[in-house]
Length: 67
Image 1 (cartoon, helix red, strand yellow):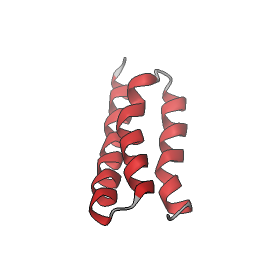
Image 2 (cartoon, helix red, strand yellow):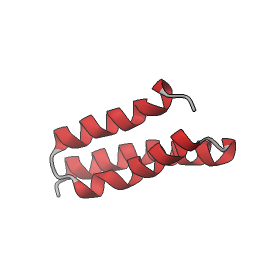
Image 3 (tube, rainbow, N blue to C red):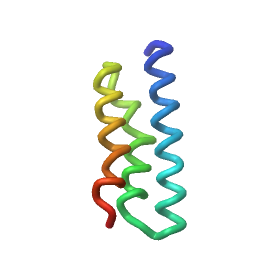
């Protein structure tokens, strides 16, 4: 793990925390699940491009599919 990977993990985990809190308070499943996924996934990937791609995808899912 290098500093770039840690920084990207911090950024996407912070976005995930926001989605998690929002989804929990509004009782919406999509932001809640995406928030949990955004907080967990950086631990499983080493490649920075993969972290960026998955993070952006998970960040956009609640905007695209409002359930």
